[in-house]
Image (tube, rainbow, N blue to C red):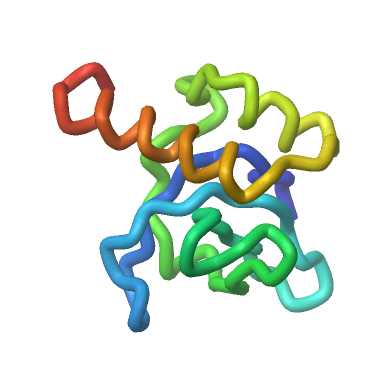
Length: 99
């Protein structure tokens, strides 16, 4: 499975439907993405979701340029607070039509 770490996605199924998350890892054995938003889903206990149950808001060509996302992609530890702030900045830009 491809490494999707750092992508911003929207959940399309489940109780967290329409929630915006960052992919913090990939479970290779079960072919699931590990999602966190820093509030309901902390980085220490990410939500496992199938690839078909999310929609990518960013991808390989249009990565979200934020220091927290770069840290995630490089495997550095990131706090839940920093992740929440990065997602808030993304949502603000997304609703203003910058994406």
